[in-house]
Image 1 (tube, rainbow, N blue to C red):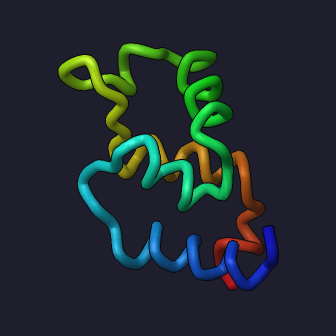
Image 2 (cartoon, rainbow, N blue to C red):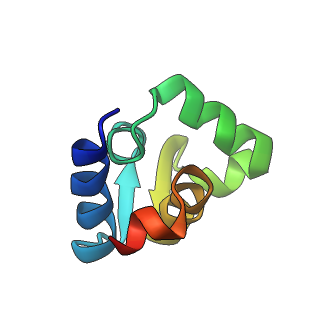
Length: 77
């Protein structure tokens, strides 16, 4: 993914926060496939990312994954 696209996603995630995100929204913002994001969530605590049987990510959960994806320097720019 290009630095420009990353920068747009970083701004959207941190400056236009939502209370929660669907799997597809979170994957798009993080620049990863839905499958990879599912694996990340399952490796952490699968049920913490599920709501009523569906994938649902809080802003905090997406931000936590973002901090593993991007450096603080990337986010700060």
